[in-house]
Image (cartoon, rainbow, N blue to C red; front, top):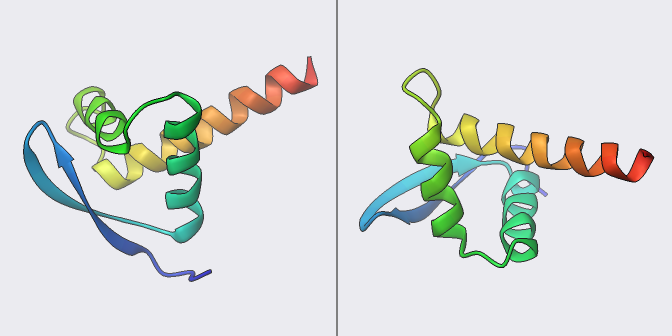
Amino acid sequence: MSLRPKKHSLTLRGHRTSVSLEDEFWDAFRQIARLEGRALNELAAEIDETRGTDCGLASAIRLYVLRHLQARAASNAA
């Protein structure tokens, strides 16, 4: 796996955009979308809509992945 972010294209509400994430974040993001039964673009669009103006989309996706994994770890520990 590469330590450098890799750029991938996403379509958010009909508009193409590029997001750079590390391989591990792309893998986790895809897995979360699969587990939720959602398309990657759909999940990215939801994150984009709720992220606010002070956070870039790549950072918002990383935080979403982190929070998802933390919630899963907490539920497994309970």
